Image (cartoon, rainbow, N blue to C red; front, side, top):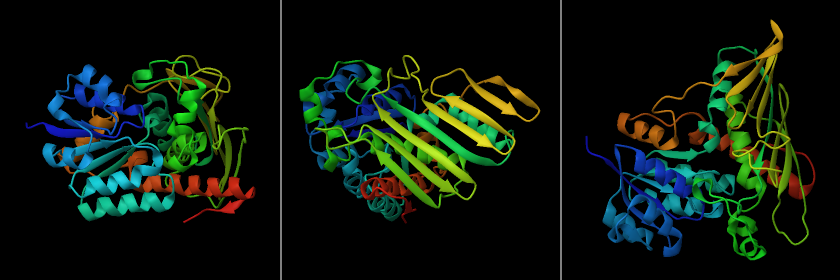
Length: 356
């Protein structure tokens, strides 16, 4: 079987290294090229994956023209997602965009429209989608173990985006790094709300079965000297009740090394029970009317092609399947509606109707 050619475009987000590692490890994928305006940002990938000089580019149009990829992995700053999707779509390639969806709902709709015109797949990758605990929680919910879902509670984040590189390599950020980083620039789509709220609202929409809230109320911190938030709390009122989504840059520890308190992850409350699903943990906690004390349920062992986003996207391309679940534009767009509403609510300092 001929390998699918992939190109990695723009290394703004450190997750590019993680996604390229998945591409490098996939037997049906060949890294045909990588591209970023700053060659230094690509050097680690060049070394890790043995990418020859002829496949390293600084001009995205030249890269796409010369490599003729089957799909692209896009990791630009949030505010440039629509720009890059529209560029890639002109070359009629399938597109996997690293979270979040976009800086605004309008830009998300531009991305959806570009993919539709090109008749190519568009997927928005949310790494939490591949955590066994959260997949197991979704299975238990769909099996009816806790009855109809009423509430989703989400708390997630990390010590801050500058404390780690690709593959979770730890670094100690300096004030100069924060001043230069797009993560801390409002115009680039920075801030914990845009970085993490989409995780909660998109997986929350997946758990809610595609239901939308009626209104949204959001509060953000206002740290002197910063133009973006590092902490946000969003309440979404559904017909079934209230759900809460909280984002935090500044957790006491990173959840992939040591779960902080509060724990990072989800708590789902249904009519007949509850499920707690925390990042990286080997079990989920299930409480039901027949077992009020609850039990620890071992997380599901994920099987290919459901172990990571590259496996999944390649399977969709190979088999002509639509992108479904949190990676689908349909569910991710609902998440973006809530994010846009949260941004407006925080700015106006009042409750707003869901934006469409």
